[in-house]
Length: 136
Ligand SMILES: C[S@@+](CC[C@H](N)C(=O)[O-])C[C@H]1O[C@@H](n2cnc3c(N)ncnc32)[C@H](O)[C@@H]1O
Image (cartoon, rainbow, N blue to C red; front, top):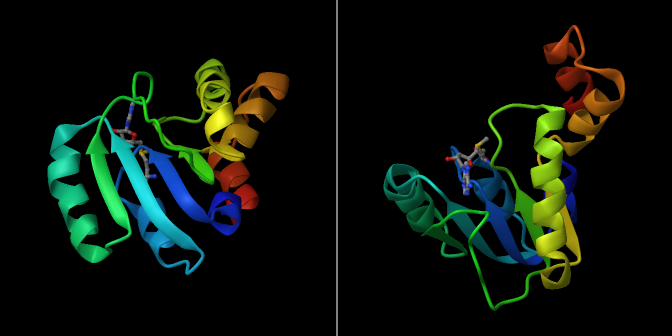
């Protein structure tokens, strides 16, 4: 995944999910800290506790990506809060990336390339095939 390859130093992640991104980041020696902001308190308690025990680099915080404030700067930020791949996500992606512009040189969103493709071309008839070709 391009973000995992590029990320280094202090990383901020919005959206915990199953924690796969946090785990992949923790495995990188050039990533020093991973702060994850997750909306769902139950996920923070269940999945978050697991990953905080898994790696001392990982810290999980309950919060909303659209209201979360942080005085710190980061080296990279990953926005991964969307359940679906849709061009409807683009205004939120643009808003979040703009809001955090001064806080990190690298700011990327999950499946942004696909969402932009859909805005231009409409939804693909075979979304699973498009995803497979994009990521594998
Ligand atoms: C697609 S999952 C993330 C997948 C994750 N990166 C992984 O490695 O498994 C989306 C996550 O974002 C969370 N989420 C949704 N809206 C959010 C918001 N406004 N702020 C923070 N987290 C949010 C969801 O609860 C869910 O855990």
